[in-house]
Amino acid sequence: MMPEFLDASTVQYLQAAALLLIGLYGIVARSHLLRKLMAMNILQVAVIVFFIALSTKSGATVPVVPADAVDIDPAAYVNPLPHALMLTAIVVSVSTTGVALALLIRIRRRYGTLNESALLDRLRE
Image: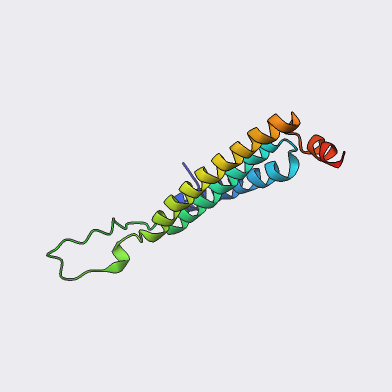
């Protein structure tokens, strides 16, 4: 049994915050570029989870209005815009990851490593 202050939306916000902190830690603390890319993806997932959690409504339904509806209460429907924007964010995230992976492959082939400090040393030579 969960405590009263931990309703579903609070748990989603806490999950988003935890993912955000994990992603930030991975970007700042890791020196391997592939691990930084994975941390960036975790950070992107945190933002998507946060926006989806922000747009949920308790007791709301999908915004499909029947043709014979007379009295329509807009508060009874979920706003589809945040969900559509998050689908776009997912597409951008996948595209960004693909380009970043291609760049990491090129860096690895050219310099033989993906370690940030080793790359900086080789670039200074």
